[in-house]
Amino acid sequence: MKTTNKELSPVQQLLEKKYNSGFLNRSEKIIPAVLFLMAAVSVLTTLGIVLTLIFETITFFGDVSIVEFFTAKEWYPFSGTDPVYGIWPLVLGTLKITIIASLFAIPIGLAVALYLSEYASARTRKIMKPILEVLAGVPTIVYGFFALTFITPVLRGIFPSLEMFNAISPGIVVGIMIIPTIVSLSEDALSSVPESVRQGALALGSTKWETASKVIFPAALSGILASIVLGVSRAIGETMIVSIAAGSTPSASLDLTTSLQTMTSYIVQVTTGDAGFGTTIYYSIYSVGFTLFIFTLLMNILAQFISKRFREEY
Amino acid sequence: MENTARVKSEEMVSRIDGRLAKNKVVKGIFLTATIFTSIILIVLLYRIISQGAPYLTWDFFQNFASRRPEQAGIKAAVIGTLWMMSVVIPTAAILGVGTAIYLEEYAKKNKLTRWIQMNISNLAGVPSVVFGLLGLTIFVRVFGFGNSILAAGFTMALLVLPVVIVAAQEAIRAVPKELKEASFGLGATKWQTIYRVVLPYAIPGIATGSILAFSRAIGETAPLIVVGIPTFVAFLPSGYLDSFTALPMQIYNWTSRPQVDFHNLAAAGIIILLAVLILMNSVAVWIRNRYQAR
Picture 1 (tube, rainbow over the protein chains, first blue to last red):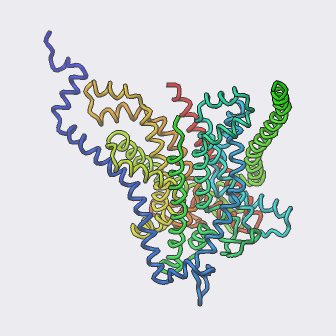
Picture 2 (picture 1 turned 180 degrees about the horizontal axis):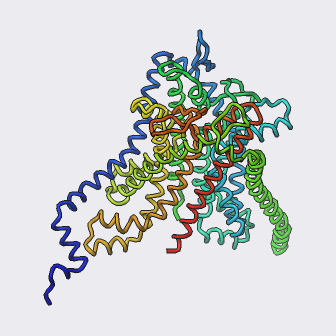
Picture 3 (picture 1 turned 45 degrees about the horizontal axis):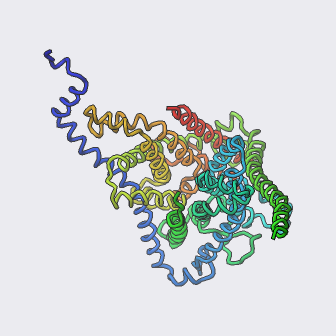
């Protein structure tokens, strides 16, 4: 049987084309390079963030002494005559919010995760999953609105001494925001403990709670700790809830009922106002942003370390 | 001997009730926490809908921002968000899928690749306000875009990029090896295989993850504030270098005013924002369910 060019099978045509066209060969070489450049964008983004923060912070330290930044107990940049730049009040504000959020979110988050993985029926799980997904998808501006217009008035009804702007209401709402993170990652860790381990404990006569607390929970501990650290990291970086509901008074006091300012809400306050480009106040947001970046980076590295170092292999 | 054994087993039997009771109490506490979490969502949605729904009139969609709450509308913000997303979606999708193809199909399993991968997961943990600072320096100042749609759109695209990359990587990884091998076996080149076999198979998964990432970009506020997007805008943009405002910025502006009327407007704005997000999520879930069966 003789085959003319028209009767070539698709495969042969393809081969023919491949060997005849330099274009195809060239594009096979160009495409990986183009894709590599795209991958480089995310590396450049990290580089851009780090370099931007470092250079603008260095400029800032040209105006303000680095000793003052770390040791002064006051953050008072808007004074015309005698501005003070001590980061401590902003760090303390962030810590107050983060601690309240953690105290609220960790117990509830772990309880929900344990309920869903150890007690709940398949149907309950099917109902709760979308609820948690919606909670995770609610924009933080919406949570901020909720904190200011609902949680704060309710709390003020119970504790009249609470000010309009305080640490407790935004702290609780930041907690609400991070509950889905803690639940979904902890539940993943809990349900990845093999069923045989669970059945073994139950067969030895343990109750479900004994199984969960003495066998499953310890086995999933690394994943659970990582979920908590990631949740805390999100709380540290949370911006809108605290900008709306926590006020804008940098405060070095430990009082939770009064207005405060976090690192994130300071950046928002300056950028919503009209601090001109090139002023010390303009550069100060980069020094605050740098401090914030270090905090969250350390938390993320800690989370990765925990889940690698303490991972149980089955 | 026999006696002590009997006493011990009796002791055990008598302890069983206590242990079971403890189990019940703990289960009750966990259930309460679960119900409490659901109630939070219900209260949040109920508050916002009851506050904002009366304000959702035709005028609200037609009017620009105003100092008088009864005349204020959301037109500029809705249109502005659409403009911004027309930058975010193509930028993040092309860069995200391109990066994912490179990492999954071309990159050697070496230190550089592992480092890029680690860099991407660390980038996902950077607070959004820090991305705002990046955008302010690079796009607003160095590139000279000012507080324009382009500056905000690029900043948001970089913010959601890690999420798109990870979603696309997972989708590409899920493509069966047999399909690729069959394609190579038929004489296709690597890129032909990726373009005609891997991508068509992976697209539903990529779409699901990307839509969720884009819905995050619609609701993010902090980077827009830092980049310097104004809140009081009484005109529509006509090009990508124009100034604009976006939905979350308008909501933020109304929320931070003391008058209750403005808070109600903010609630109305939130209803629109949440409606868009729920719509996008439903599309993502629909795509996931539609193609999961394969």
